Image (cartoon, rainbow, N blue to C red; front, side, top):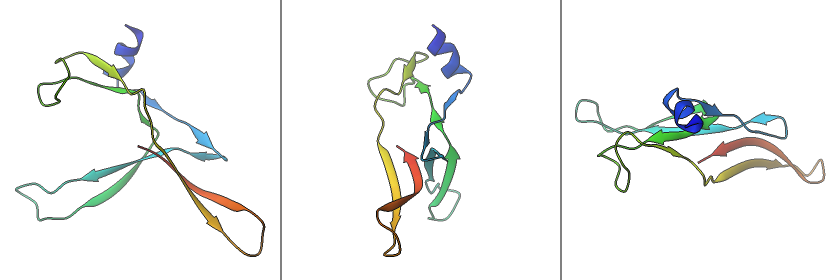
Length: 93
């Protein structure tokens, strides 16, 4: 019940890796009214979960679901001037 109330209130999870906040990439698809273009937007953190609906197969409308699997994308930069790599970005999918 507690997770459901937090999902209903659009709570977000904020993780930090190497002092960088997690970001979620949101792709805005083209619609019938707008031309075919894709805009990539980054949001801080990621949603705790979602509410089921008739549009989402395998879910029950109005029921809260917790995201329990995440894909972490660590972006890094290497430079011959130093040994190792430097993390420059952190995405959660």
